[in-house]
Length: 327
View 1 (tube, rainbow, N blue to C red):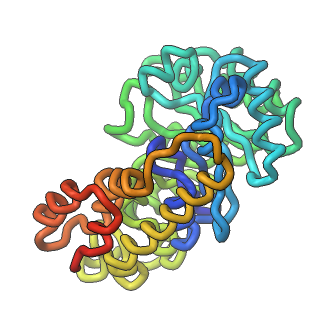
View 2 (cartoon, rainbow, N blue to C red):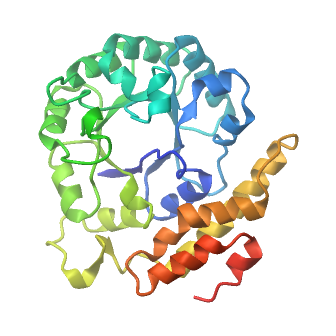
């Protein structure tokens, strides 16, 4: 079974993808990249296409609602030579994405999904895939129409986040629907939604998917992939061998995770500055302090004194303050 890091806006930049690659992910995804942003020459959008040395295979996820913009974006991304796959997002429920007619707005329109995928497939030699949901709500299942749209457009795979758009990122994961899609599909199916430990990974694997995508559970532990891959058939883990669903033997100490991620963030900032010398970037202090407050504090979840540590981390503003922390 292959395990994949999901695209998560605001989190899966090159620094975190590097951590996930080291932690055993077979494939990682960029944050959602705006096809319109690339078509209109947005430098901040192009920053999302940076890849750090040492990353494993990376796929680029695009979002958009116009065939010409997605074709342009597919050509631009392919020309970088950095990616092994292009993916169309047809499932994100964020309102600003939906207002553009992209993301989960596309779940209701399989014909448009087909046209967008055709435009992408015709613009690149890379495999093109689709990430979507079963439908907008439980009384309107459209996943088979979306599968047909993907297959007839020439897509090479489909990822199903097995929750309806109306569920956002919570609630029941409909594994029975995922299993039905696997049975019907002529292209590989990747399952997504709710995988956080060995038990939930086994349940999803039982649907017959070709790969399992892990998202939010990887944020506090990018080594969850190694955990899941190393113990696929082991007995039910005991409380003594797991911390929040993660194998203690494979999870590096939180200060090590924090330090490694910090170094990757510094490298990414330097790389973007070198590749985009005309752009005004956040200072390195602001760059890393923001990441510490939104992401790196998660590595200490569940440990004694984490509340106080989080308060301390929330108050820092400079790299020097971060590096002076005594663990």
